[in-house]
Length: 127
Image (cartoon, rainbow, N blue to C red; front, side):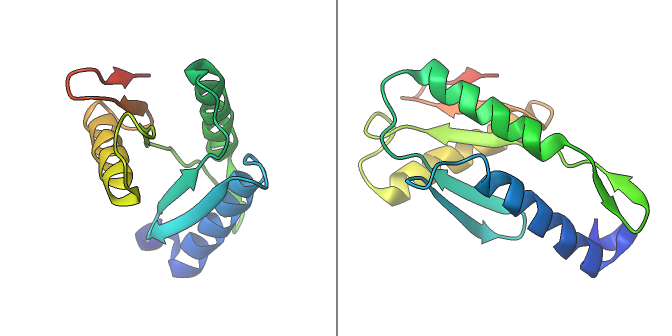
């Protein structure tokens, strides 16, 4: 994005995507930018209904993928997601973030614009 449309356009895309993500999470959830184009979301009060969370993540991916118009040009962002669950995937924030990060890179290796769930080794799910 920065190379083709410039840094100002890249910043505008990040702002737009940030607002879209903010509008997809609840006030009790935590959304942070880790750096560059990487974000983390901590969902609070997640029930053991993994399908409900997957539905919410799909809504987030749909919001992110809507076109953004910058300087009369339409751009579309893709989203690779890695998901980790407490306590199955780790007991500390560092462990959970590492698992989610590993799952995100697996999603990218599978062709990008995908979601990958990290569970105990050998039990990953891809969507």
